[in-house]
Length: 281
Image (cartoon, rainbow, N blue to C red; front, side, top):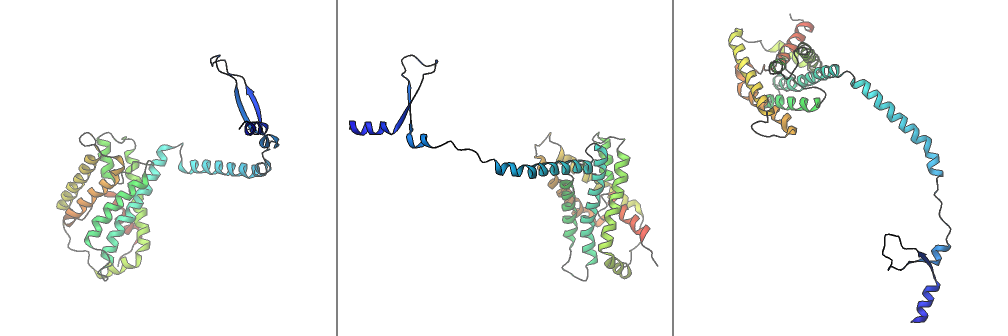
């Protein structure tokens, strides 16, 4: 047993380390045993040749990323917050027309194909369109998308009165642009529909205006009830889906009276486009 202990100690190197001052004096020095084979190996040196060779590429990549971020900030107009909000509001309104009126166009322009579009697709399409536009807008703009809703926000103090005219004007512009893209897609079908069906019986706008005012009030009331947390706490991530659900309910329950003209921009924008671009016989 003693011989084996001496043999192990012959293969090890004893390093004595002094006890730190914080330890009691009764402690003996520590004995750290390091194998002789490890001690005899030369210290390893880090191979920095690969890192040195990649340094120019890394520097080029960093400069490219910095350039991309600066360019994106200029495109997003981060230094001009109001302008970026108005542009985002215009684009989101155009997207709303593309989705919502696209569902209407598919319903009425595909009458010869009975399985393309049904009445339920109008309300579902409108609600899903509003939900999608609110999600797309994110924090870029408030995503009002509706001159009537923008006016209601100004009345309750959620939107500055100085910005209200700009929001209303650009929402009409966005609706005009969205209707133009929709007309380009369904141009042939719209011409066929216009030459086949009549516009319908002429009626006064008094009753229709009352129905539109009531349904728009229901829409605004529902949205404010959802976004208010004083009574029931709700996750802000659910707001877009809840707003789309309100639009689905209003369109699905009151469309037969005066259509779904809940949005003056959605109603007037396509009409203005037809008036300025299409010629009738």
